Length: 174
Length: 265
Image (cartoon, rainbow over all chains, first blue to last red; front, side, top):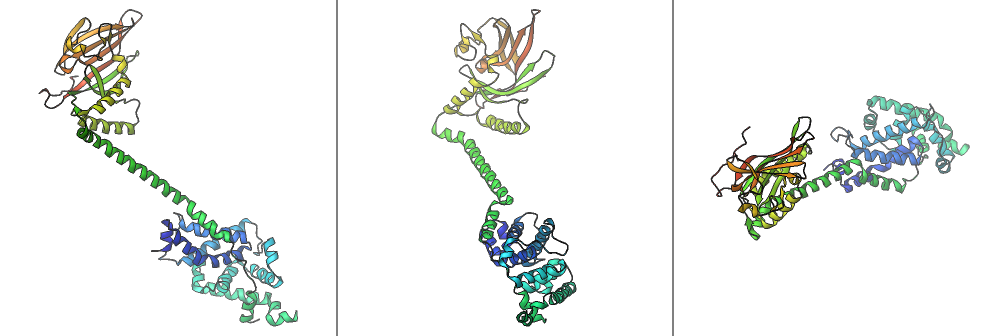
């Protein structure tokens, strides 16, 4: 039986199986989008619980569950970012936890990614960090495959410039 | 910077471990989601409905069960009556519908329905209950059920309005003595046939203000097929305030050949 269907019927084992299979990449994505562990935790939790609601529009014949869940995390993250007055360029005030956890290079990478335009940033995160195929990325964002591809190319090109100083060869020179 | 180098740099951005509280929080949410609570409520409701059905089935089966373990008492007849209240402004309304009979001079109320006090739902349930009671009780009553019916009769509304008391015989309907006098306890004020049953009308003044007249049928164990209560007005006349009127007499099959009949308007 479909795991979502079983979970909606109250089968805890089915619900936990869904959670175990998908929560890690979803958490990573949410964290990278929001820069906050607490926000990422809330978003992923809400993402799974929304599957159980009556108004949930998930249709397994139309969308794979992973694609659907990433879509929810993306929407929830954007909602939170907009609520918390994130700057136009997408940068967000860093939380104390991120200050502690990141070293200089990591911080630079995070900043560089977060400074990308929203549409490029999200595609890059899914393509690079989650190894999601472009076709699926296009489905998550509801865009054409070509658009997803070009966004990714632009994001990478931009990052190559921004992070040039941190290239392996350059790092030793710094 | 080539693609490989960019990938290496991008991989420097690590993510903190998933907090353990995430799994716990999701589980809590799973168990307390509104849909589940609704489902649980539905289950409770269905369980309650199941219990209600079971109790109904037991209740319906009770007369037959009692028949097996204790002897039954035959209710010889059932009289349907309306109790009508007459107000000072000239209006009137039915206060209660009764189904009853006399047993050893006491009126046993099988069921009563008060249309003005009940909701539609209650009326529906009462109607079902009444229909069932009418179907079963006239034919066979166990001693236990008779006791129960007696207690209901003693506490039922309206009956006190029609209990006629006499120093010689006590309250009308309470003693078998009536049966030996042909239902005559006071000066007889009339004779009338009601629903094919001859009646003797007797009258009494209660507490100097109320006049009660009862039309009792000797062949129905002195059952009063009509009772009127009148109150004394300042001008010395009596004003009808309440009337109980039989509308149908249903005889138990085998007891007599008489058939029930509706009251002529």
